Image 1: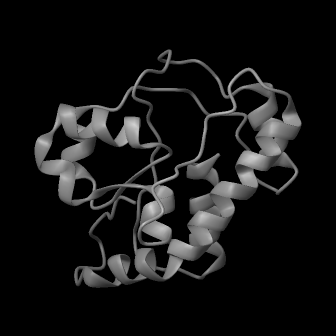
Image 2 (image 1 turned 180 degrees about the vertical axis):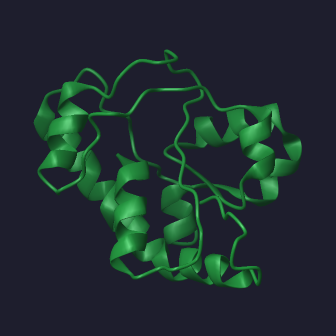
Length: 150
């Protein structure tokens, strides 16, 4: 949900620079599609997740990223465990959006679609609050063809 939302918001902001938004889990079933509830909650907001396939985060992905946002602190800890140097660019999304707010956003896996919709709203609030920082990070690059991972 966060990947689709962030990509949509960046495009809605008119971002012209190259950027890459990827999602990966710290313990996903590789290749698993997005849950029906995720697809439904995002479809309500005009975001199509039907082609999404789960994948596990890798050291290579972490190294390439300029910014890593996790849903919960346990996910941040796992990313930093894979690549300790990621500590300076890896944040719980709520804390990146609002300094000091490390509450995170719980994964609604297995819950009804209403819970996914609520999770989407929480992600949207955090990403929207973080957007000025994300846009500033994208502007730091001076080479127009450089891929930026968010």
